[in-house]
Length: 246
Image (cartoon, rainbow, N blue to C red; front, side, top):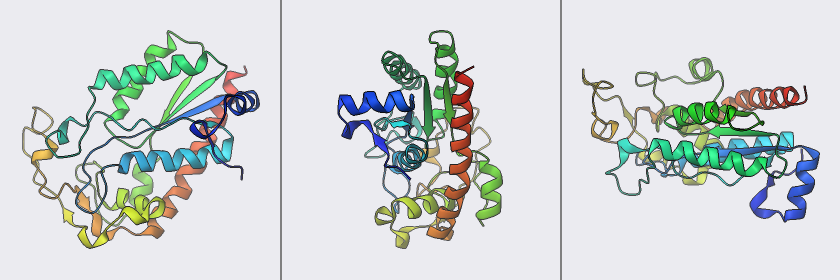
């Protein structure tokens, strides 16, 4: 397996040569927000970056620096949170796409670690389809529900993943030194009737910041799930790139 092609560590000549070999760039997309008392605020960055690095190793795609901020409005009052407005996230995606296409990138891949970024990725990609000749594809844990059902013991909190068994397991696989399992808890807050129909915020529902059961997380689960996500994501990238040649 080749080394990840991280552009921040490369010279302009190395980047140019890499583009001539495989003109695809990957943008990891994360967020800076609380993930309970047992995980760091950079969980979404670390997961998107870790997966993107492995995809770069496997495909030869260029790895762009990670986007460290996303739409994190619900945690805005918790120390450390940095939240961008949703349309700003869209604008950053579009600016990145316009930038990389100027020097020969033929496809941009968005690899997301933060659920709230999904809407921004979707709408930015649609607008870019009318502005650029290069495709933009966006990935967020393919076959997530099926893989979680098979490899996680705890249920989600109404379909949401946040600081739970799933994310904690992935962090144990990718950044174990930043996980304190002694502080991991299980919490399933009561869901107000108006949740999702008003401005009621996740930040006001959970005492711990955990939505699910983080205590059941293991490194082995994380490694197993990564081994399922990565081949699927790699195949999607390669198939999408082949389409650009037609």
